[in-house]
Length: 439
Image (tube, rainbow, N blue to C red; front, top):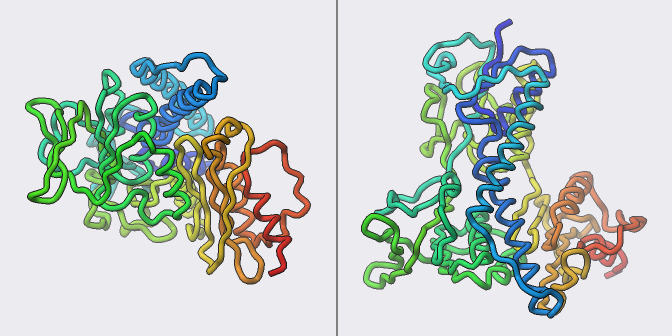
């Protein structure tokens, strides 16, 4: 039997390769850069690093304002980026060892492509029993005059920023844009966030309202189009607004967070959409028999856990199982001063909201009303349909409650729960309160 060739070492490709190798298949994993992909290099881990530092500064600033701490730390921005890169390298080593330990043959530092019939490694065709395309994505750049100037950044080249900009324009209105805006504003930059439509469009109103509150240091410009990025050789600002009503926002740097673009240019023959994402069915099969695709290269939702699951589904189908991807509802979240997390199973429901309780990492936020909130969605047959949590550590309760909701969690399903106290999460309190109501 020939090897399975996996192109791309991000979460989707890595999990596909490890699942196949653990089942006894010979697997070659080709990665031109390093194991970890978008998540490690330019996504989740980069944002985690910036957010950890920003939270530390914000918490110290709060304690100083209350007279509980003498002096607030400042950020050594270059030192922060260097420390981040060092930790990313450590994680890369851990991931590479974990992958090799399952029996995967990693071919690093070489390029791979698909010509419509077979995989090629550095231009040389290789025989494969199956091919998994997991080439990932890269940050998109808006089509704007001046986007190629020095001082224009995306998550992909943020590590080359030499110093903290005094004035920064962030272009975008989604999760990554608000995460970057929060971090840089907390570090001390004057931040303008330019949003083409609405901030965090289509998200629950509670999420949007509390995110706006935490972005109080950021100047938010909604329903605003960027006309151009201006400057002679490097960025001096951006021009925004409709024709005849343009205005200039001065800036030392511009950070574009307008989405992702599929890395599919070297994958030929497979059916693609106009935006370059590869079309697959729910078994991760492409239009060519024996060729699978998974992860960011097939399009949204661009979430690491989803990419991993897609990789597993592709591998299991290669192994002869008939497994279908089910993404009817996925818990999601992002981080500012608090974590914002949510899940809903799609049922018709009512909801109730309460402020978050004081607890670890939220005690000193009480005077400013910054303890977040909990929201529970419930159905007429007294079943929990969804949750929203804004709290210092919201992702864990939402993740586990999401699984219980998928299993049909009734409103009285947590009546016997003995929680750890104190906690800054209010979801269990709200669910129990709703269970006690008889109206």
